[in-house]
Length: 219
Image 1: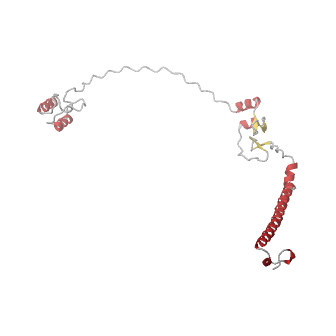
Image 2: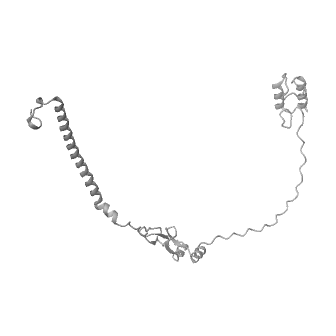
Image 3: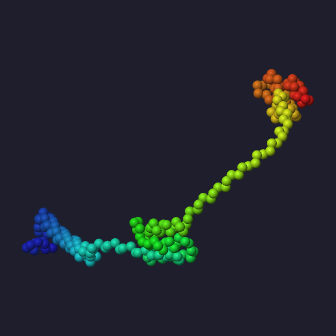
């Protein structure tokens, strides 16, 4: 194989010279390749920048003034009796019902208020018309109080006998009967501090309490 100047072959050159020649050749090829890639990338970037600058949409945005806000549409009367004030283009149809205040609204201007909404401008004259069309109800006079006749004096009933306060009234219903007898029989021969049938208060229910109850029953 012939390599390098003088048609020298690799086998006739010293090994160090061969390696040096191979590295030099490889480095030169690498530089050439990098140069080609660098030029390609630089060309691509340059074209992209120029295209963005000269793009019609970008250029139009750079030179065209900002669009101004479109004015709001005017206000119009709508409805069967002209009782509504709405923006132009949004007219409505309503049920034809006559009300006196609708005639007052014909005197009011249909225009945009300070908040930007379509509404009737209520002037003092229009307000007076509305008040006259819808008067507030006046309070009805209260009837005068007529003197009521004094009731006739009725005879007082005879006093009824007071209920029994006998200690044998165990359930406290004002009388001594079989209900009290049933309470005593239920607690007979029991002892304790809270016995309902302990009539004499000795702490136990026995025949003494039974005797007292029987005497109260007989009377």
